[in-house]
Structure formats: structure tokens, C-alpha cells
Image (cartoon, rainbow, N blue to C red; front, side):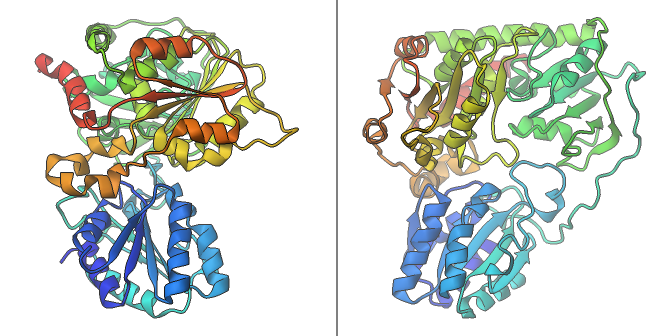
Length: 532
């Protein structure tokens, strides 16, 4: 019996009849175990973790029995806190069952990893941090939690792969202080190793200038602040599956890259030199592969350099970008990449783009062009923990906080939109933003379709555990808030809507399919296949 199965079995043995699940990737082992146990308990699914926790609280209050609420890692866990506090002061038997990354990823800036240990402080009667694969500790923790007369918190670490396994091995230890073998300050005298620069969230112009001054390809995420100039590689994520990636000898990591597994795999390789650039949040090192940490000084005005290594990447990028654009142009139905491309093209100089987590930021990553240096576009996202919660409120606040913006756009998914519809509530006399919110609506969580749990063998449980179709009429929801709404279903309609903002706060709903998302992503990845 693996940890997830043991957890569910212990809940059932302890008299738990209801469990509330909020979908997530790290909690997939628990989700599948709960789905398999539906003959022994009732499983409820909710999009919003805050709502999920209060649903569990309500069931427990009237049934007088313990109820568990299950979430993935990161900000999802924080959304349980209000209900945990209520349960603490009311003596309600609520079990916060949170999935977590392995302890070894704490302190490395790994995606959706924060310190969930004692997250709820003394508001819980019992807390346990369960290491990957530690069945005995998981069972003991749940048995204690089930005996308490108030809330408890059981934090269960899972390692990848997250489906079809026990969820990882035991014995992962937390990383202490990040390793720093060498610290130097610009200017640097680099050798001739084939080097690439990875620019994650908030890397800034220094990453771009570092690449340009040394003739290196630049892999810049949309929110890096680095995707300008001449060295940025638009299709880097696809090219990392091609032969050029095999020839990389050094990678320099700037900012907080979190978007893709190919990049995480690259900066975790042990057969190449991984150099971290010190930033305000330290160095991103999820694979514990960084052997040298550097500091970058003021970038200066050194000229751009071209090298044969760079030219190879630029040529492949141009070829692959042309293939990708041609593929999108051939499609008659509206794809999420059409929406992201229309938004990216519409962002003017001095413009502001707030992009939501999950698929929208990843789709944008494939289609956003290299903007010219000096355009001062600002592209931001909540990438600290990459949560979907609070995104509309963040966009409204960002728009108000940057009044000089020539235009403000938010690009979000439907689940992200529904998670924060309170962000549309702006009372009389309050400052209202000039903001277009573009919602890519595929009626559920399509991000999971591209992960392991989206494989055909899990189709019977996918919608219940991960897809979470909601069927919400966004037009009616917007009308209730007094927010203008437009619905588009074709690429021309999307282009027309993005080109004709009506001013003030407005919503453009772009309706796309979810049932073909896994195949669509596979088709796009396949554009690089012939180069192998």
C-alpha cells in the first residue's frame, strides 16, 4: 500500500465519510486514491480551495464527524487558513490534508514550493510533515488527527512521478543554505563553452545584456523583463527537445524560471555547468546542480556579439517559429494559442500585461515576439508560487498602480477567472481600472490534460479530479457585476475584439475546446521532431 492509499484507508477507518478535493498536480496521488475509494466515502470537488475548506467545515459542523480537505502545494494551502481558524475557534473537526514538494526542494525556488511546515501555527491541534513514501508516519499522523476535537494539518510530501507510483521514496532531507562555491562580479572572462542564459520571472535587463555581450542564446520567460533585443529564442521550450540542447555545456540561471519542465530539466542537469545569478530571492536551483554563483553588476553599454553558436539557435528558432505560425494560421477553430498571440501582438509600447498561471502564461511563452528594446512593456504574473488565486485583483491593482500604461490587458484561464470573481467587485466611488480581461474558457482545468494525469488511461477519473467542468455562464456573471462582456469563438473575432477596447473594465471571453488540449500540445511539440 502506498502513502496515498494508506492515507485514504486511514480516513475511512477513522469514520470519515466526506472528503473535499481542490484539483492540483502535486496532490494527484491523493486524488486518485480518493477516486478509487468512492464506494466508501463521498468525494466533493471544488475549484476554489477557500470554498472547499468552508464546504468541509460546514459538513463537519452538521455531521459532527471529521472531514478532510485536500489541496496541492503552494498558495492553495494558504487558502485553507480562514476555515482552519474558524474550525480552531469553533472546535470543528477539520483535517487540512496538503500535498507538498519533497523537503529537499525547500529553499531552492522550485516551482510552487514554500515552507508549509506549521503553516497554520497554533490554530491546529496536531501537525505532521510526512516524508515521501513514509506510510507509517502518514497513518500515525492521520490517526492522531482523527482523534482531535478541532482542526489538524497533515502535510504529505510527494516526489515525481505523481501517477502510477507510490509518490516517491523516503528519506528526502531539506536543503540547507544554498551552495556558493565561487562568487564573482562582472566583468567576467568566460571561456568558449557553449552557453545559454535562462531568464525567469523578474530577471530584468541584465540577463538580456549578459547574453548579448557574450553571443549566447537567451531563453527568456514572458515575465522575465528580458525578452527583448536580438538574442531571445522564442521557441526555446520546443528546441530543448532537439539536438541543439544536447550540445549545451553551460547554463546561466537568472531570476525565477518556473514555467516548463524542459527548462527545469536543463537547469537540473549534472553533466553541464550550471551557474546561478544571485538575485533578491537567491538562486533558483531545483536540481541542486548549481556549482557557482555570480553577481551581475551594471550591464553597461558593451556591444552585442554574434557567435556561430548563437546563429545556430537563431536559425532553428526562425524555422520553428515559422512552422508554428503557419500551423496556427491554418486552424479555423479558435485555439488558446491564437488568443495568446493576439494579446501579445496587441500589447503596445508602455503597455501592461498581467498573465495568469497554468496554460495562459505557457501559451504566451510560445507566441510572444522579441519586443524591441526601449518599448518599456511590462509583463507580470504571480510567479512567486505560481498560484491561480487572486489574479483578477492583482490585475486591477497593477493597472491602478501603473497609470502611465498605454494599455492594460489581463490574460487568464477560466478557472483562474472564477477563482477570483470577487476582483470584479468595485464599489461606487472606487477607482476603476481601464483594463481588458481576456478569459480563455475551455470549461475546466486543461493544464492537467498535458500532464501525466491527462493520459488516456485516467480518462474515467479525469473530469472529476482535474478537469472540473463548471458550466458557468460568464456573460451572466459579468452582468451581475456590471462589467461589459464579449464572447468570441473564432480567430477573426478574437483579433477584432482585442483591437477594439471599449475602455474601462471589460471582459472578452474566448471560447476554446478542452477535449483536444493534450493532442494539440503533442502536435506543437511534434514540430521539432523531424530535426532529430
